[in-house]
Picture (cartoon, rainbow, N blue to C red):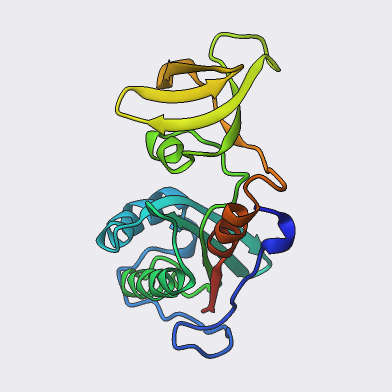
Length: 205
């Protein structure tokens, strides 16, 4: 995916421009100080799973009294703009119902991971099939890495084509892999991935 292929959609769950609102505390809800990524992860993992998605990451940043909640989701085959819009509505509803942000104003951004997401889980490697990656090997000096193409990933490890040969590595042998952007060979695939990976839905609360 090239940087120029990134696009985003900013709108409310109902399709209107993003807006901010004060979320009422339903009583017994979690106070803003307690709205940490771990708590949100426990709340939102089942929500993502119900949509056949994986919750990849949650990041909370603050700017004065306003908070930005970034949620990253992914799925086998990638996620479309419609998937992102659905996830945004469901995640927003779950957060509001649980009162996890208390009375704090916040903006929710839901998107899919870009190519800079490190490959650390078996599902990451499975979804990177066909991509060129750079991989540090466990127990090797920093900077000692191999580069090759992911042929596939299974329960125990990953098949990598590197140096003209096919090798199988167990997950414990591999550090965080990084997808290498290829201009030309996978241009079509990168364009498709860019449409999915950078799609974003933003809701103001």
